[in-house]
Length: 163
Length: 163
DNA sequence: TATTGTTATACTCTATAACTATA
DNA sequence: TATAGTTATAGAGTATAACAATA
Image (cartoon, rainbow over all chains, first blue to last red; front, side, top):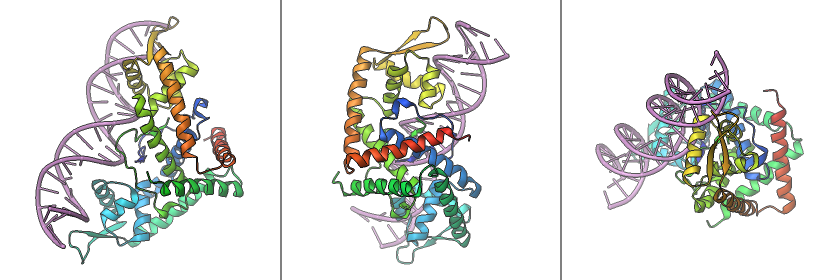
């Protein structure tokens, strides 16, 4: 949040505690609650691959936009340079990503995925799809698409705002 | 609430950084992103009253269910006993809530709002309503209700689950 | 023994500031 | 001078464990 948003990473599980009816009139309160639960569950699912949601996000960005620098990755993830260092440190330790010297700018690193990184990403994508299927199972296909579309509209509108 | 929900309280503002298109296929990723923005904005709005979203949540619960104990409040907020102490410390310091001895159990505190606390809660409720109106302005009334209903359905389904 | 509130402590995630090596 | 990456450090928010008072 701020990935604060991604606070409450894989730390302590606040599982259980349902949202109080006192807040159910606020759409944003429900939004926050559901986002938390979804994150917790997906995080638990990803733990079988030994990675966090932020690391999964990093793998996704590197695969899609790589090779790219740490600054560029941090921008896509919405995190600081120094935080990016830690994320890549861990991915490199796990053998999922590599830092290479960028030939055109020797200050920068060119980030790429290893073969294992690509495999892990594919597995994580599968887990993500399963987690979504489970989480939105109470809705029909049409309703689920409707929800996605409404949320997407809000995102697009936010990006248009001057603020 | 689960905080985490409320992590990323009013700390550093990562405003700006939009969600990467790389994640837009996941409804839960959008959910997390929107929840973050909504929380940030509401938090900024509440800062005029000198309180955080968690403190606002506490005021709401005390007004609705009070007098109640700190344990009970913590349960409603989804936070630990020790964290509850800090929340109440601050509310008491601001003159918004009071700890009284519960006559039936002298270990416990009976939490109540002061008059100023009730006034602050009313102001905060107004700010919350305004924040919601602004945030969901891109949607029509019908769409906004639809969104709320879909999210509410997910919450209800989650509570039914054995897990 | 169990529970309420409290305190001390530790842990996680993150950012800020200062440093280095390049540019 | 400015920028990419790194490191050391600090802060916010939270939980865990131990304790006193009470049940």
